[in-house]
Every structure is written in C-alpha cells, then in structure tokens.
Image (cartoon, rainbow, N blue to C red; front, side, top):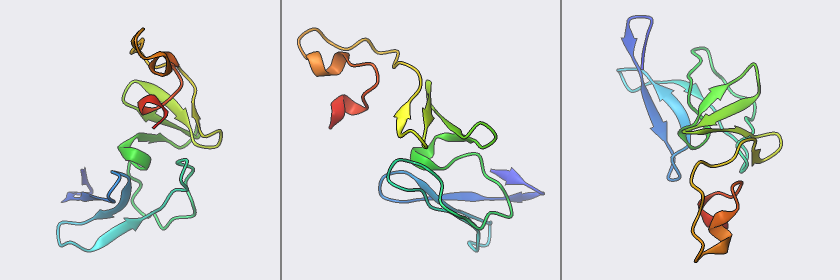
Length: 104
C-alpha cells in the first residue's frame, strides 16, 4: 500500500488477519486486533488501512467488512448477504448460503 509517498506492507497472522501495517523500514505504523468474530478492538491507527479481519476490506462508517463477494457484519458475527456458490446436492450442509467453509 502506498500512502504519503511511502510504501507500507501488511503483516498477517497465521489465519490471514491483518494485524499491523509496517513502513518500508520495517517499523510498525499501525497495530490492531479483532475479536474472534472480526469486531475491531481498540487500535493505534494513525494511518488507516483498508484491510483487517481475514484480509477483508473494512468499511468503517458502515461497520461492515467486504469479504470478496459479500458483506460481513462483525457486530452480528455473520454475513449479511448470501454466498454466490449454491452448494452441492450431495452435501446438504454446503447449501446453507450463510455458512463459511461448510461450517468447519
């Protein structure tokens, strides 16, 4: 990400959540965390970054996250829109449009 004439890099945890934004020198500029459902916890963020939980793009004014093809509401801990993949008849659990990764 380029901001203010400097290049910044995302630091991810093992799950792929953005936990920090570092400058080109490697110094951490932003540090933030989320609860297990993606709701943001208090953070030190002088340079706002668009990505957070599971690398979804954060829409702070709306309190939502854009996760590839649908909106996720961290406060509700659920997706607001259906998944575009319809599932498979041979696997009924996969046909629930609001689950993530077949509820695993």
